[in-house]
Amino acid sequence: MRLIASSALIACTVLIAGSAMAQSMGEIRQYAPGSDLSNLTQNDMNQIGMIMGSSDRESEKRNAVRNVIRKSNKR
Image (tube, rainbow, N blue to C red; front, side):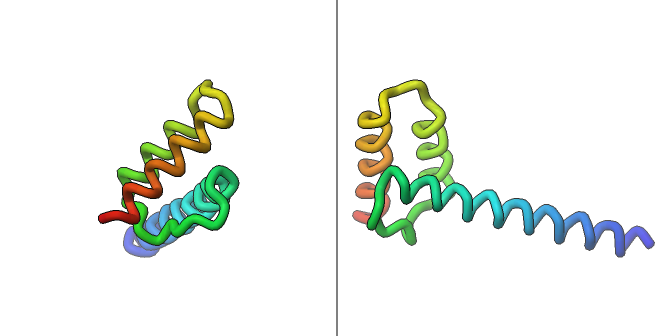
């Protein structure tokens, strides 16, 4: 019984994490449309999340997000 409960918990966690990642990618595309997001690391995603949640002006956020994406694509 514990195995079933553990498996269900893991499956829910993976589903939620995947959903959050997809939502984040959609939000990132709003700041950098047409950008290649395939090279973003978890660290890049965290940094972009902090940028998007900041109180900076939208133009500053767009530039900062695009810079993170550019750097990730140069690796």
